[in-house]
Image (cartoon, rainbow, N blue to C red; front, side, top):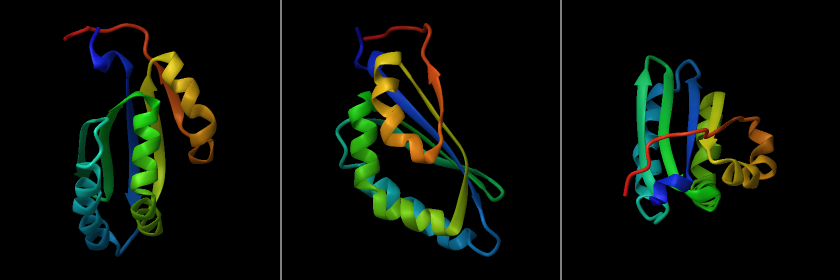
Length: 121
């Protein structure tokens, strides 16, 4: 079984407030730099459509997500001063999702339970 069988992905969508685009874009490389030090990170990148920014990210297990949020907490605070978190999805196996319900409750995510998929080694 692949380590990705336990991967949990975050899907945050940020709407950048008027006049804050340049400041928000300047934070993105800082997020990437901080995340490069996280051994549980599977992938991490940003994409943008106008003033909407999406962060595509996944970690091995719920513990990887919690470690990431702890690592980037200060940066996330700055990010939320410049934008609104319009949507947050968390995708993964049921046992990993259960570990995240309480710690992420304040962010009001939508949780998606993995049903089936391709297993690779």
